[in-house]
Image 1 (tube, one colour):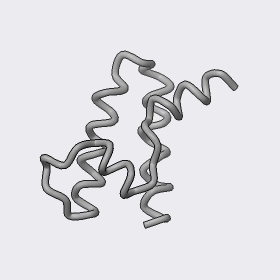
Image 2 (cartoon, one colour):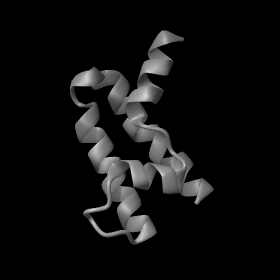
Image 3 (cartoon, helix red, strand yellow):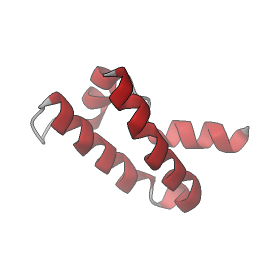
Image 4 (tube, one colour):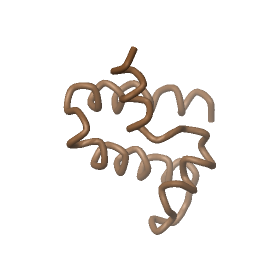
Length: 69
């Protein structure tokens, strides 16, 4: 799971930095759908549960943290 998590951070993080906060929800939904497929979870699984299971914090937190630095 660690390899997959590191690969899924690169593209959404780059897109979040470019698009800004307006499209973060869309990017987070795509990331959630990806983890749903990897973990074989039903589509109705809430995003917080998917992030808890995968160990990935919300993308908005990562993008805002990087923009502050």
